[in-house]
Amino acid sequence: MVALLDTPEKQALQPWIESVIAHPPTGTIPCMALNEKGEISATTTTSGLAWKIPGRVGDSPIIGAGCCVDNEVGAAGSTGKGEENIKISGGHTVIEMMRKGMSPTDACLEALHRIARNYKNDKKKLKTFHIFFYALNKDGLHGTASLWNNLYDKRPAQYAVHDGAQARLVRCTPLFDEATLSE
Image 1 (tube, helix red, strand yellow):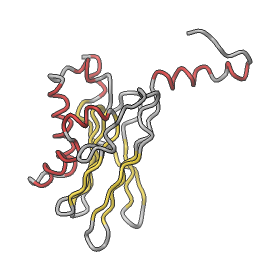
Image 2 (image 1 turned 120 degrees about the vertical axis):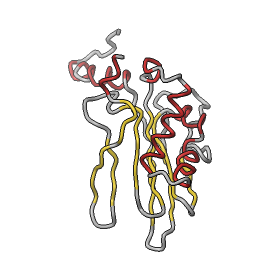
Image 3 (image 1 turned 90 degrees about the vertical axis):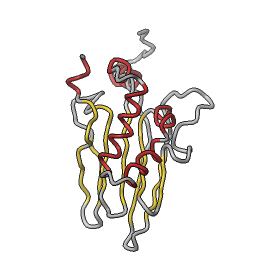
């Protein structure tokens, strides 16, 4: 890498710059809520993939992919590589699995299984990206699943939950554990 940093202060930023380039930040945030009347709502906000190709449309604005709500069943959203989500209509898939009786977590895992099948479960190809699914059903049960336990750092993936009284972090259920990255 060519050092374009001409002062000690700028050079001190070099490790952070290299980390951001190696693991670009994303800004997708799905949020789902169930009110006291049993009505569900959801949104997915995104700044999208860092350094994205001009004109690229991620999954957030695609109905049934990045965010989907069915007030009879629940809501689902995602973060991560939107193109993979679009291929399986992830939000819709998660809701339909909950409609069939799956728990929110199991429904999210089913969506991840579909993505993995698109790659013939080739972990070498799958480890080039990350994706998470989040779900909330009409009974207030929530769940999530991530493709990997922790692809980019040593911490297990977590998501935030607020039950109306208390906020907490809950661990995501991974489809693949980090130990399988070398397989």
